[in-house]
Image (cartoon, rainbow, N blue to C red; front, top):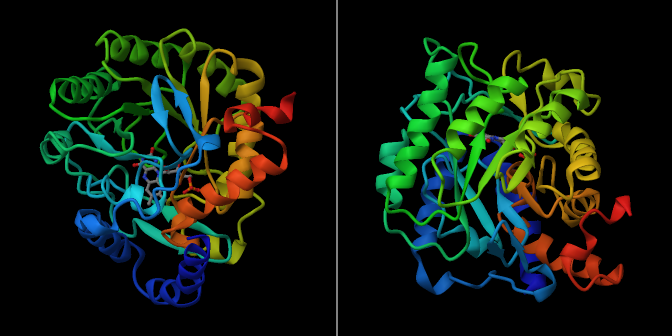
Length: 368
Ligand SMILES: Cc1cc2nc3c(=O)[nH]c(=O)nc-3n(C[C@H](O)[C@H](O)[C@H](O)COP(=O)(O)O)c2cc1C
């Protein structure tokens, strides 16, 4: 099986990727969603890559995860892939980000590739069909791995702070009332591409939002998706607020806004005057914040590492810094669809090599 995964990865990187990268990024994204949905329905393929090893098993926020590798929010914003994800080795995945009202997306270009930097330019601004349509689509669907729903604020410039909060709470209310089988929610407070001035970074505003969401007495654990383009002091203030509430995990983190990050190949960056960035430019800051949060709040809250994971070593580094779970998107685009399966294999070997019987034993080991 490992050889087969290696072969597919080799073919992807040397042939398929070359073809994909010759086309518009958003067109390829849509193609992947449509085909992924079809593949997810083909029963004989199921479980081929549903790799299981007990060293990778974990229970986080009351949810059982057979693999720590998840699809990060943003790729499956049409809720088409829940059945395809386990075929690629994913242990969980987040749909969305979905908002209370639909949004057709920011003006083009919304997506671009920085091939040398190993990054994607993202300027979608929560392009999505709206929560009513998405909930209807997944109603009564059974998922074979934990699937979560990422919720954010509708992208409208006219909304003031209070209306923005009401908008998010309304979406949560609808999700709670629906007959859907989500395992967790993600509260996305960190999209850098939104219109208007509503934000939930300052402690008071974050406190108000969390108070309102927690008051709904959600039936599923809540994870909070954090920004990375903030100082340690700002993040510390946010974490102080978050850890007062019943929040299952924080995710570090979202896209890179800081264009001065040293990982950018400058000539590529110049092609994209707008937008924010995934992949390698998020990696260092995501790792710093995982480390920072684990040292100070690791006993109070679980951490999900996200940003620039392209192989098992990248994932393992985040785990050793303090992450219990990993999310990714850009690695999939650059390394191929079976990256999660490959990471599962290699991660098991890395744990074994370091003498860990279970992934949980390695979490935060860098700090010990
Ligand atoms: C095409 C694309 C769309 C994204 N949309 C969202 C989104 O809707 N919600 C969200 O929380 N993050 C979104 N993100 C950010 C990712 O979830 C992730 O935090 C970031 O890309 C870093 O991970 P990566 O380097 O593995 O891609 C998006 C990223 C990409 C590449």
